[in-house]
Image 1 (cartoon, rainbow, N blue to C red):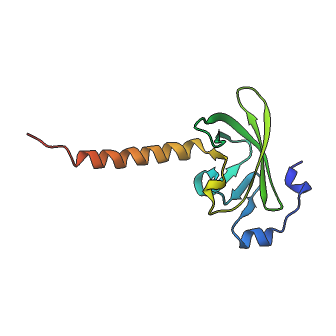
Image 2: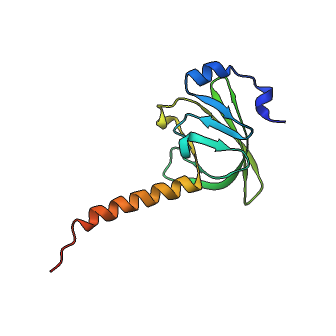
Image 3: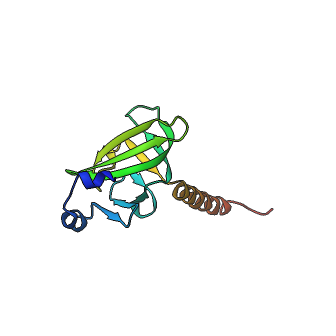
Length: 135
């Protein structure tokens, strides 16, 4: 059973406010800067990078599998499983699309991160190539 069935929410309000909605059987649109994926959509059963940033210079990075997602009273709740240890976690975040400073954790999609790194490197290469001279 999916946890969202235990926590009913007004999908009309969340859709209108562009905050959260489910997509088919395993997808969830979460309009939060803490979700770093294509179009801010996550899928249960998919592997992600979970980065915990507790306000210190140290970051914890864990490879996780997304087990479940539900929305309740303005908070999105994620159930995650550490791929290495098998330990499960439940994290939550109040969904405010314009408040990146509220993120003490971020969930990254591997493919999206690779695409952003490649895009950045191509941009840097283009910038560097302008400085090259043939003598």
